[in-house]
Length: 129
Image 1 (cartoon, rainbow, N blue to C red):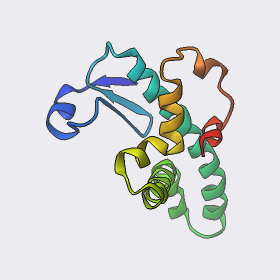
Image 2: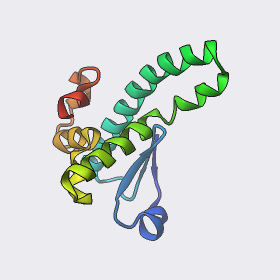
Image 3: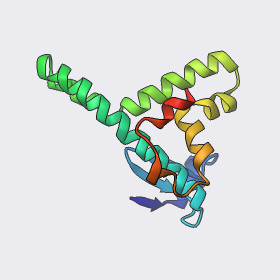
Image 4: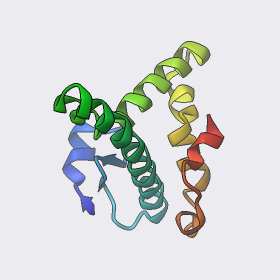
């Protein structure tokens, strides 16, 4: 689902034009096709990480506690944050660290290829790690 929310990007996320949150796309401009494609790539990445996290956290939840199921929807963001911190230590530059996160690197690299998601292989972001 793509939601245009100009206020969010004009008042809160002023440095961004779009964001993917839990599979939902929030964009400033519905006409920006490259941005929407970029965010759709993040949706695919989110779903892939969630699938694997579901297998891992689901197994742990079965044996220990159902509370572990809460880890499934946030696994993507945990990975994203850890990878950002590792790259920040390496590069000591926030912008470069952000662009080098494997999820962002893949999305920026392929945002202008509008057929990419049709042919993309599972866990393709791994190539960018």
